[in-house]
Length: 160
Image (cartoon, rainbow, N blue to C red; front, side, top):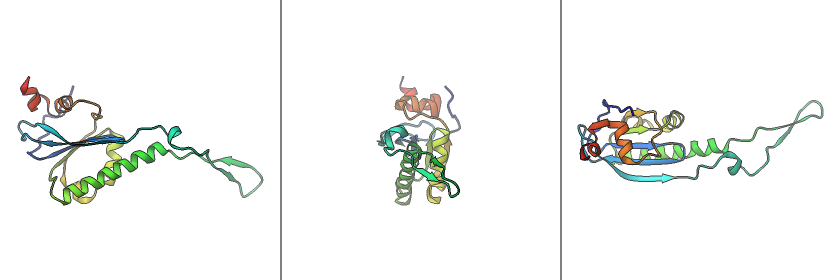
């Protein structure tokens, strides 16, 4: 398990652990030396495959020359759903930064979700982001998220 020993987050910093369907927002109740993540908010949307989201058959297009018709590619509703979820998350983070509730952010997400989220972040949030970690940790318990991010310096590790 590789940790990020250079990841130093001050008291009150937010750690956003997400993917395209789930977001966990933690606040560091510890300090930069001994972080202690506390859950502030969690949300999840159903992570359905495209075949279960889209109900219409793909459309058909008529060629302007001749009588041939071809099927159109079915939209990737799963991808659209992920993109919308991450855009909504970016909006919530923007409000938190603008209202002064979050001054420092670390974002932890798999590369695909991290890329989509990065595109949706406002300039205010971009300035508040102090770290990005391209890992999928959203399904892990808090103690394991802390270990992945901070190694042995996490408060949980020191309690054992």
